Image 1 (cartoon, rainbow, N blue to C red):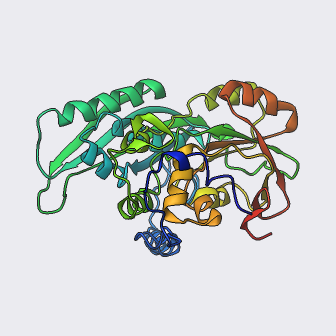
Image 2: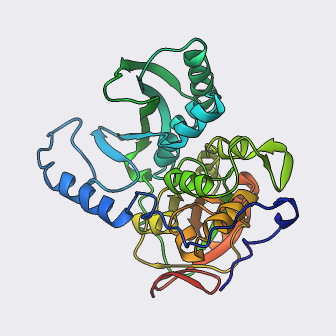
Image 3: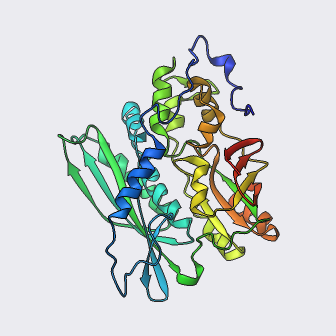
Length: 352
């Protein structure tokens, strides 16, 4: 299948070069398969577990870790902004990456039904620069407000021998009643999938994004060929959406599963269930994905195994509640649960 991703901006290209390569995430330096091996090797060494209050409730590998806290489970996540910070440096605009940092953590908490309550950040710097910290703080504040939680501390380290530019990461704490954790165990064939729109590339796949832009005839400062009112860098810095409204879905609907679509794209669904996903009416990817695919000669399969492709968060629930969930979140019904495989229209993401 040739997805409808390779059009709509040709008129504005004016001699820009289209890649003759078929770039992949691995070509750019990130091999998802090797990354999974590294993670597994690390996890295999983490055998000690605490007993009593604070004991882990689930194994490592879901969206968030859970700790026993009486009637409740405490949920924890940790994540960073990734190489998106390099584009922020190029654009000299850092006031959105704090939102990204919080979003990547909060969305993983939401994916198991936990409500975020507190956050701590870690900012590593090559050097200090006037106005930089204020912009980072601006984004962190906005992210915390959207998430309805407090930032209770953090750490800043100046590491000129290690860091070139800066790195921003954080850890988030949330809570959920033990019997209300959403782990995907209730997902069943026939359930409906509601897709909620992303705001673009979010904070994953930027090693491939940067490789594509570097090898194209574009720069981050060029106007978007599909919207001359903003630059390509502006669109790539659009902050990750925080899906806090899914907490309202939990109150109004019978939810069987959540999925936060980040790095490795739709392959992330294996965190939720071994059953299959049939996306017969997916959300339309934003124009930025069309530009990246065209310029990088990226195959459809690679796009859906690397990026969110316009669907940043998924809700799996009975058909009777699907319309209500779509109304609350501004999403729509995009597919259904089937016996096996992952499919987007006639594109097979994972074999059945």
